Image 1: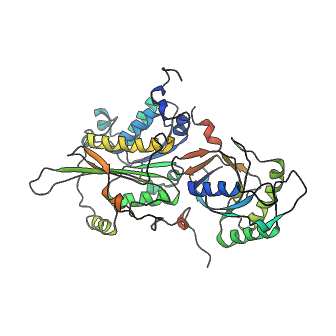
Image 2 (image 1 turned 120 degrees about the horizontal axis):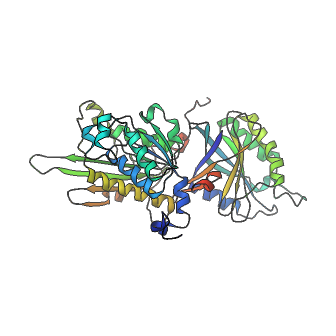
Image 3 (image 1 turned 90 degrees about the vertical axis):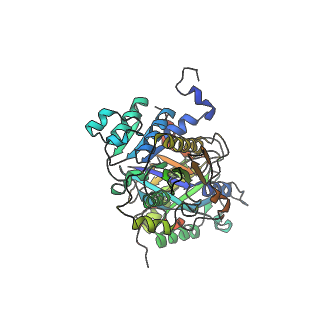
Length: 270
Length: 176
């Protein structure tokens, strides 16, 4: 590999890294603040096969964080999937980009062909549905998210997570990220969530971390990825570290997604 | 039409370890993979092997034909057909070619495998069936999609674990 080669500076990833990365069909659900970062980084790294979902268009209030979007895109109400497509093809002109301007639940079949899914979605129920799909079709799922909380007169606290949910390993529920109580609470607030605070730097930290995990998962370059991954981000402290819940994780198989549920749902003979 | 096979790494390692065990008299081992089905877009058939059952030692038959690595009894095939019929799973005959690199089915495999698959199709025509061939560092599969007379080669076989590994046709067109 010559120094002029596009990937010479990432050759430490391994002899076959380009092949593994180029072969991987990657799904990205949600192309807003987090997903747009991920798309851009994957295209730089050399990913060539994308399946994208986002129903939204670019609006002025997205421009504080939507990577690749311009003022003109907001004026033209350009769909976010088209921004992502432009970013990818600008770096990988021969990439395959399947982009769907709809919720993935309305057209789930393409998602099942993915080798790896990034979830950049709002809300706990959305995450549960996406993970359930990934588990059913044996697809590793990487979840990112950030939120801002404020209690009383204290300064706002910005925190988030990066989670790798591997089929056969503990899931978001096992790791304590999701719970029936929190899901019920979210359902009770339906329609009253309001606009979610989002900033480009926090999204960037989480997206970069998620992409780093994906590259390690594909290339094995660190030979040290400990699955499952649950990283906790505190923007105020500028830290990202393994979540304390991992220390209390029970070993064994995941009871929420038994192997009998893999594949298309079907009727069972009685 | 294309077929993608996806299985968990612990299962793949279990298959490999089992097929590498020497048999008292047969020169290779045989097992059966049982798989669930899924549908992807673009006429892609997703196949998920979830269980592996080795053929028990006493279901191998002695053979004097040096071209045949292992001959198994009708009981082994009946047991497999019964499970296919009971569960609606697909069945894949699995064996090992002990070398590095992409394995290929032998002439004997290509002669016998269609007969075996026909039996499985009778038991469950709605499932995909076929043959799964492993080498020491690679694998490939011949897949008879539901109700199809002729097989296709699995376009991609994904071993889901750390690291993720892809085998099959697509591996060689990753970088264009």
